[in-house]
Figure 1 (cartoon, rainbow, N blue to C red):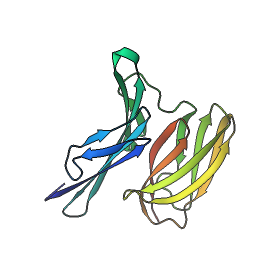
Figure 2 (cartoon, rainbow, N blue to C red):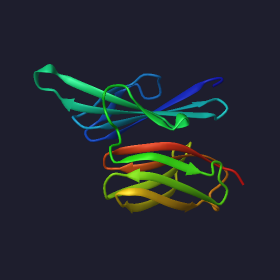
Figure 3 (tube, rainbow, N blue to C red):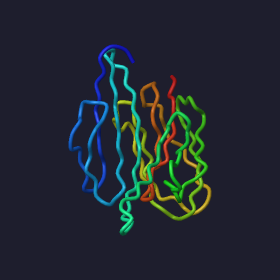
Length: 175
């Protein structure tokens, strides 16, 4: 990143908000006893945008105080790394997409360990939802074909969202 840098923070969750620091590299937040998602968008003077996201699972631990179990989502590596012993997505596994880059259709395969509602969401790097499908996944192997013919060329985050968490990977569309 070059020149001046703009920091924009978003906090998503129940009973949570930014107390101070919006527009700076550090923030102070208030959070209740629920999972929250913290998103940082950094834009440089040329309009180049970088985003990062972390999940915090907050649990009441009795007299021991607060236990934080953060989960770092790294879309470029197609992994979710637990910083503590936690399992951010319990009911979806083995996400595969092909071709990548895609031009007309992208195939999405994953394993679902239960019957569940899943939101399939494609997000551009400005945070805008480009495509959304809601599906009911059966227990076992799930195969989908998503038409991306009308989606502009570029790089996207592809997310599978369940009640248990979000599984994220990247998808390139090349015409």
